[in-house]
Amino acid sequence: MDLHDGIINNDNRLTAVVERYFQSCFEGLYRYAFTLLKNNDDAKDAVQAVFVKLWEKRASIDEQQSMQSYLYTSVFHYCLNVKRHEKVRTAYIQNHQSIPHVFNDALTSRENVALITEALESLPPQCKLIFLKSRFEKKKYAEIAEELNLSVKTVEAQIGKALKILREKLSEVLILLVLLLTQ
Amino acid sequence: MNNKNHTDVDYLLLGRYLSGEASPAEAIALEEWLTVSPANKQLFEQISNVWSNLASEEKCILPDKAAFFQQIKDQFPQRPQPKIYPLKRISVVTKIAASIVLIAGAAFLYLTLSKKDQSKNTIALTRQTQQTILHDTLPDGSTAIINSYSSLRYPDQFTNNKREIQLNGEAWFSVMANPSKPFIITTGPIHIKVIGTSFNVRNTNETIEVAVKTGIVRMLNNSDSITVQAGEKGIYNIRKQLFSLLNRYNLNEIGYATKVFNFENATLKEIIDQLQKAYDIKIIITNKHLEACTMSSSFDNKSIEYIFDVLAMTLNIEYRIEHKTVYISGNSCT
Image (cartoon, rainbow over all chains, first blue to last red; front, side):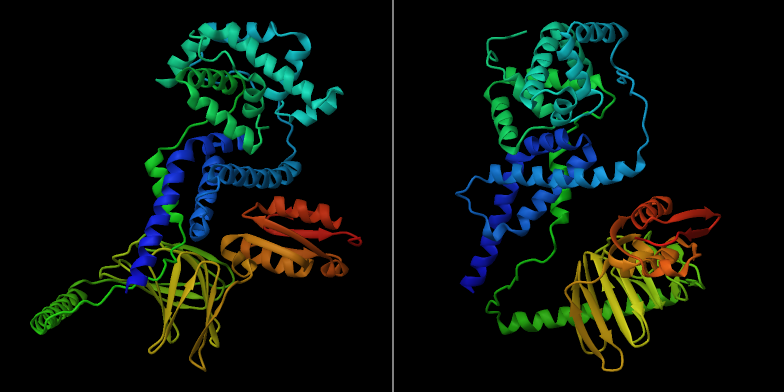
């Protein structure tokens, strides 16, 4: 009897371990999955798949090891797979959509739009070009680098720079935006 | 803005992260940076707001933590570790008392239930298919997809504490979960008992096959039973009265209902047979040589146009759709 009690107790404990990892990592994992997939539903699926997997493997969890790194890596691979499938799909659809309109948030007031546009315009030409390619054409760093005959490092640096400038120019607008958006 | 706490902002990392270029290690680094100070978190929120506002793109909306965890927990495969409850020493008096309560309870239940059976008038409905597949919704909201030349019989409302239906032939079921009202399908000599799940039942009069997509299904005859889990297929040999279990099955078998296909080195003929059924269309190949062409591909609930685009591209053939008929033409598939 003691042995069986032990198994049940151990399983309850492992379920609690899984839940604890969820509590501590869920937010970061979800955010990460979202940056990779750009879609809330898909991000949810990714986090869910990773935790269901973890639960299945709960008996072999090594609590000494870094679970965080395992979880982030699992999310990463899951998302890569989703994207690979998506690529096949979009290759067939191939509907060249017109350039999306820039601001679609109803909460963004006209003045803010003007300010953001102004800030975008103030970026150095190459910086702006790279930033727009990343942001609006949704291109990967590697694709932009190849297109413009630059190194990936340069692309990375320019996007970082764009973010920095935008933040500095827009700090007031940003505060407003955050207020509006978090309401 | 309060700048003193995030002087060491790594914009390169932020850029990589928001662009979806961050490695798992970088994502962890970013999360750690976020926890360093509330100012970091605030800055991150501002930047990601501008980021998502700049393009017509979804914003990252964190789901409710508790509800989401519950949802994940529900997905945990229900194959619990064996639970064995220890028998405690129980006194004879308690045993007798328990027996009386049990018998009385059973008698009461029997009486009330059989009365209920008589008092409620339900109308039996029969859904019979010919060549085409029928999508049907049952009184409890569960859905059934009835394959060709099959029939389903059930009352217009499930009044008892059971949901009982009868099947001849083949059907796919997606059953609404209701633990207090088990869903029981009778087909031939066996019963199939489920709580909430999706699965396919095929009665060929020689065997009865139950292929389970999600959840757990129990197959029973008068003396024996087996449990079939998601991804498995239970088979009952009607003549031998024997159950057996396969630990996997070909998803294409139930493609008529799920529209999920995974063709591996399948001939165009095989592919077309499956598609005709699932999509209720007629496919005509003008050049018979094409039937032997093979290909591998998987489709998960795709439109018929999409599937034929893929077929056409892969096999170098042409197709046109007229009403519910697809004509395939081409010289050869090399």
